Image 1: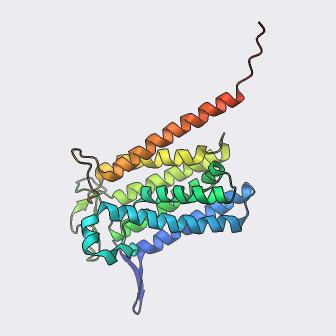
Image 2: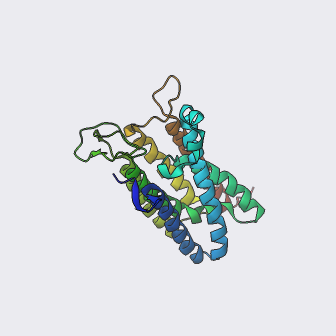
Image 3: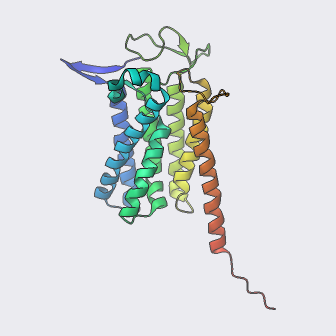
Length: 264
């Protein structure tokens, strides 16, 4: 595709970095608009946005590095070359949840309500960022003969050249946009705090488990299985999210259950 958006003298703007930055910007815009509707001030959202962006990048990159230890042990400086591609969204979610849990507790902010606030933005940000993956050729798919396959020919593309591949980056992007639409509908009609964020985890993990079947890049395998490490992470997140959803629903039912007024 087009790993480099454009060049001005010695300055080159990588397409991957451009779309990742655009994804964060759109996510922040969406979250700001939702926040205003729920009484949260923009400066507070901006503060959280900075932390989330930083943790998302670090966590996603760390996840990718841990999946490719042999390469980065030999090329440690390449760990910082995030503009060349190589981010694991699930890793970003894990670090964001951990750091934001500390931040919200410190500032006495409601955990689930704030998580719901950011969920749609996270979905559309990931959807836009995946377009950058497609342009760079990272996160590429397996060889295939389907009619919608893609062939990478650019010499700087991270994907194998001159081979018809599944456009897994676009599968992920499409899934992200669909998840964003669903979460926006849930935001308007949610019944309890945490519902939107939990469904983000459920939908993203489910999509990831399916799309991973078509990935062609190596992401590490669980010994004795054909399951990749990213599939295992997605499966664990999915199980945790489903359990959390049932726990919250059960607690709500108990809270609204009418008292026992039977007489003896």
